[in-house]
Amino acid sequence: MLMAPSAGRTGAVDQPSAQAGWDAALLDLYASQRPSLVRLAVLLTDDRGVKSGKVRKTPLMRVEHEGVYAMVGSEGGAPRDPAWVANLRAAPDQVTVQDGPEPWDGVAREITGEEKARWWERAVAAYPTYAAYQEKTDRDIPVFVVERRA
Image (cartoon, rainbow, N blue to C red):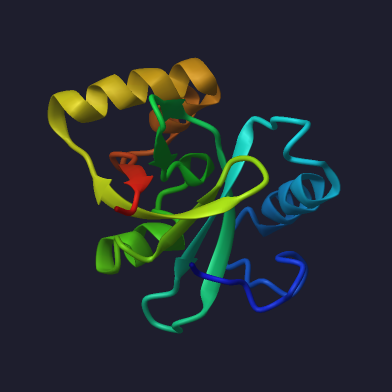
């Protein structure tokens, strides 16, 4: 399991995102809740930086179907993918997901075609703003699915 540099899993974690302030606020909110009692509309992911080797913690909107999770690389409709996209492309087996009290190790894969269309529909149903983000950018927003590592 990937572990953030700080024992409490918040605080001294690198936040390279352009949305770092928003991400940090979500991380603090998640840490302040009791995930076993309160299900937030976000999940936490950890991935390893492809260049730095550092663990990166990212809050993402919760898109789940039958125990499989989507990671949507929207970055608020920015012209570039979030850093974690390159990290997952380089090391898809180096991701940890937390949706509730216990994190788990997963394996990610980028999806395309009909599979991506199905997951995109689920993502927009979970968080309608994704549709506006896609309209805002010229890039095709990447979507990954993450399943528990066997």
